[in-house]
Image (cartoon, rainbow, N blue to C red; front, side, top):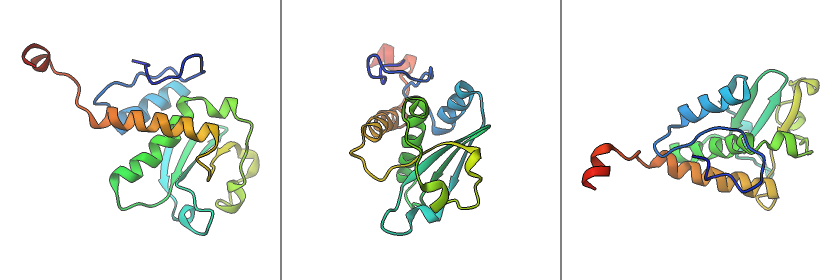
Length: 155
């Protein structure tokens, strides 16, 4: 089911159905992109006035999602879903922004290794709104249960 894709927009061919887990979605995104995906918490993201919830780094051979710490499992999941949504919407291919975070948050990371660092602190950005909208849709899929044969027959 690809009803979550906006008409005419490029996207990664990944099926997302009710009841999918974050782990399964992560696996499907890795398979579709043909590269490993690492997800790590990075406390430095929540430091300072320009704090970020998460960011996605697309290096030469691996995708990395870094997210701010959160005591809430749902909040953490939303951070990750937002970054996965950028991947699903192919924002590394259609967005020409390379952000400053590679230097300010990850000073030891070689600049040549990073193809894209997608991290913005403004939800008013077109790409951010699309990613957040898709993350919300996926969150409802994760929290819903797949329809069983029993439910189909007996309601």
